Amino acid sequence: MDLLYFVNFHLAPGLVLGAIYALGAIGVTLVFGVMRFAHLAHGDLATLGAFLALAVVQFAGVSPWVGLPVAMAGAAAVAIGSDRLFYAHLRARPLIITVIASLGVALMLRSVVQIVFGVDSQSYARGIVRPDDYWGVRLRDRELLTLLATFAIVIALHLFLSRTRWGKAMRAMSDNPDLARLSGVDTRVVTALTWGIVGAMAAAAGFFLGLNTELRSMMGWQMLLPMFAAAILGGVGRVEGALLGGLIVGVVEESSVLLIPAQYKSAMAFVILLLMLAVRPTGLLRGKVL
Image 1: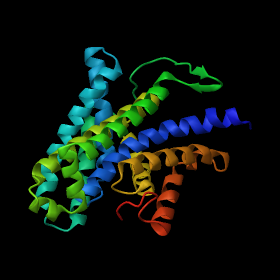
Image 2: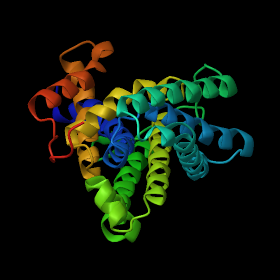
Image 3: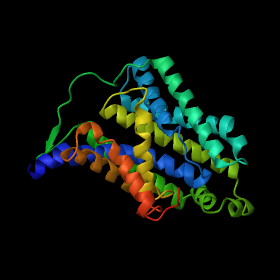
Image 4: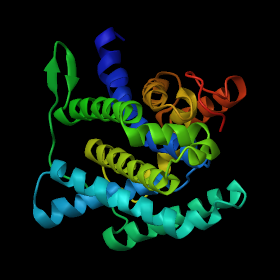
């Protein structure tokens, strides 16, 4: 096996998959950083976002890229609504109750997708797309755009959190909610803003996964564990950690087929998750402990 073979069949697909995991992991890390619980509905929220973009494509006959902002806005609204309806009144209760409630929300979102769109696999566009050759590295346009869009989103979110008033308010609430409240931070607005960003990131992850593979009603549930593994690997509460963790998990998954059968590669996320929780619970960039 030469270097180009490894790059084309393992490294490049792993980076693309890792970028998708990273977008999902950003939502996971923001929920835990601000709300302090593991959001089990995150994968199905990503599925909903992917199918919202499909609905735009089917009904308006436009490019999938036109459906992306609609999907992000729709998923953001659903995330905010889910918090108001199912999570807000549980904030004073033990966090495990909210975690279980999020599992119920996941089942509801999945059922809605299956009722409206069915259970068969679908895609944004038909036909075979041949990859372009970049000095021996073969990438399809959608894969290159996935990588570029992921890095652009991460940079934009990092600038928002570090430079804007509401971004700093989110960081303050993540560090110490009581002190942020005493300092005049409107926690209700910050919570709604956080859920809006979480929903948008989940929709982006679902969209890019559907764009590079296919849309299935279980796609989000199957990527939930890798997203959590990516968030914990990079450091919970760290956006840049989510990106790093996602890329590592994606590359490890795609490279693992060199040693184990392909049907077991999804177990690598579970292995990474267990190793990080046992060896370094704060992650590579020293985030919060989940």
